Length: 365
Image 1 (cartoon, rainbow, N blue to C red):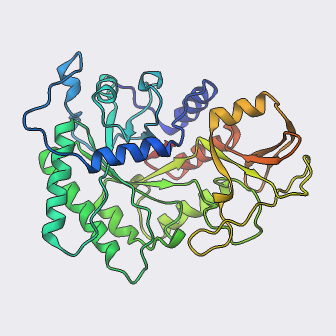
Image 2: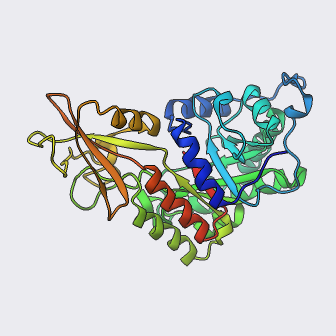
Image 3: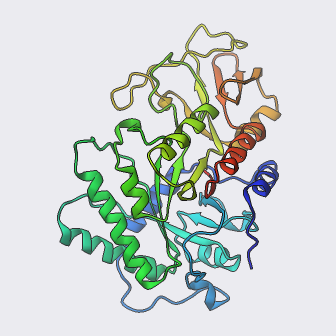
């Protein structure tokens, strides 16, 4: 049986695994590849054979409930699943292969498939066909549920938000008719306040799903103040975002706090000294705002730490007390770059905050 741990223990567990370079790093190529596979799925003419050494591992976990008492909701990346620390993970998103399924189910971990590209249409028939096909794919693959991750803009005046909620609700109802153990989660922005033009009906999404995964990262997607390199997920923003979800009526036990196990590095504009604290960055617009984190690039946390600890070309470093995030500069003789990431110190603040607010859990990405 899998050991279920409370959030205080998770703080120790996550930091321990962090020092061992265990990471659900952001892997967009892997995610895009999976999405294509899921979108192009066709039902098999016959029952697929089970390749697990134990046939029971090919079946979804039947524990009578979609969520554990506390969730450690992780994301599959392109690495070998065998390397993961399975002792404390409860759900693994983006997994679809039988190799992933066998290994996860062997350890009592649920495997959550990414949703196919959604149909946001008033056409009830189209929606029902999408739900029927999606549920059939979940059942055939033997996975334990689905996570919706639609992030395109929806104006507040649009009906698309309502159709999205109806799609999620219909999928959840269909899955729970088969088994109450199936899990349906929805990824949402770090705040419910129309981030990046996403004016989604948050309460409808919460009611339609088992949990909301709050993506508390990439919070600099639209920079309204000085166009400078800065923290990926400042701690004050974490508090602000979660509080806003609570303010509008979302129950804390429906919230999983997404945590970035990756950071950003930004090329500083010409004229920046290798020891400068502030790094002015190129203006790269995003959804109508002139400056964004698109001026930088993501870097997995283990790679970030290896670079910093190796002191390769590191010329300055510090810890921003206001944002509760560390940074450092590098200079290769031509280009000054500034790196921002979450360290064990800043991550601990967020895990403790999740505990204090009685959230359902945390989710490293």
